[in-house]
Amino acid sequence: MEQKDIATPVRTKMLLDKYGFSFKKSLGQNFLVDTNVINNIITASGITEQSGVIEIGPGMGSLTEQLAKRAKKVLAFEIDQRLIPILEDSLSPYNNVTVINEDILKADVKAAIDEHLTDCQEILVVANLPYYITTPILMGLLEQQLPISSYVVMMQKEVGERLSAVPSTKSYGSLSIAVQYYTTVEKVMVVPKGVFMPPPNVDSLVVKLTALNEPAVAVNDEQLFFKLTRGAFVQRRKTILNNYMSLIQNSKEHKEDIISWLERSGIAPSRRGESLTLQEFSELSNNFDKFSNLSI
Image (cartoon, rainbow, N blue to C red; front, top):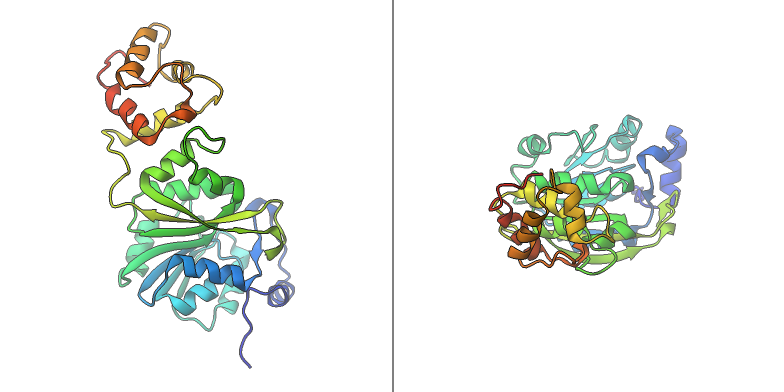
């Protein structure tokens, strides 16, 4: 008899009972139990038989199983040691899956790619991300500039909205800028709470991030660029001048230099950070070293 998909309430409950597994709230464990949602995620990712796929937080393998059916290889990172024997069981029919019992935030992802995915034509990330660490996972992968062509990832809806947000909107912030610096962002689908076991407290959003061949704007110093973007949003209701007065060393002595730097970059000191575009932040960053009195 053919094995039923893992992504059903019945099969997931069977595995839970078989292994006496209990969910850890601290790990943000919400397992997908809806094959339609998983099929939509897979379709959006454009996986082929030559794709290598990285998954983060496979849980019991509901998404992993469907990835394994379509991709050349799947490399999954799972932090919870208790899930490893369950995954070995649920994914036993598939010989193209490697599960690494490691925290993705501490893992050497480049080394893992070099070891497991070098014979794949492209590398994609497809995952239902743990909601409590979505931002550090995404930024960690993007900042390492790994050979990943796209990300199709599910996250808390509110966080997903931030990724594609435009200036002068409530959701726009330093995360929007960082993600749009590296990728183009596309919303795929809203996912209701009820397709998870146990259901989370919020709805979810699947987004597709397609890596740009080069960053969206040219900056001389990426580290400085990101410091300035984060600093502009420390207190959203404050002006860009007041936020940077808090960020820049000895700012009271150098207030006139800060104003000159802003104006030279085409930014009125009275504007708020949420109104600035990526291009304007790049101008600020690239002009910063012209004012030798200023340091962060």
